[in-house]
Image (cartoon, rainbow, N blue to C red):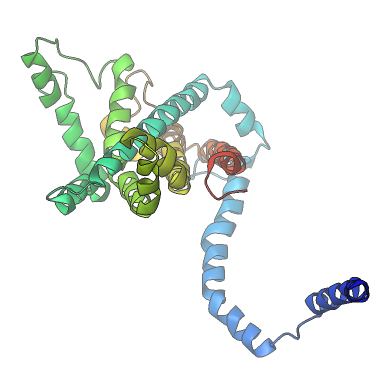
Length: 318
């Protein structure tokens, strides 16, 4: 026994060296396969270079100039970036964007999660309900905006008409700075509800039933099964929905443009709308490009922070 043990002890280092040697051994490259691989990815690579990478470099160059599309561009360095942080309207726009984002995103995810859990039950007409809730996602933004401008109208709006039944005075949803942003957030949450709900519903349906049955045998209630079994297992889907919602909210433009034009009194002016306004309404292309890169920086930082923090709360991440 001692002899066998010593033999094994002697042979283990040599076996380890052999495994490492095989792992470090260079595998000859099949240049024929590599050539066709590069040929196949070349169209997509050229498309990305031509329509993403080069325009981004060009936009950064424009952000260093003063240019109105009509006269020759004048190089002014980083003056546009300094102007952003001394511009009171830009500062208010950034604060509006953070307010809009950090209210609409959590609210949309919570409502979508509750809705997904309800639609995960066995009820009649389930497919009809899922289709009904997903319709706003594929609806035209212009049509949605026009409908809600009528619904939220101070004098003739359907919402104020419903409130009048209960003796509540009309609310100036789109004309009062205190109410305009909540109204835009309400429409944003309603419009994104279907997509978030669909992603979370798919994740809930992938949760193994055996885990719920085991939890029930241990005396867990429906509340405990939802919060201690389902929620941890669908955190990857929640992470995906959170990331996409954050990025979309920082880039939001269409609803504000069609519903409020950034008003009243800049109460709903978001960074995406202010970017468009400076670049294409006032033809301050350099300043608009600088705002775009500041927006890119904020999105990059928030995405990076979320990506780092995912290890602490997303199931399966280490």
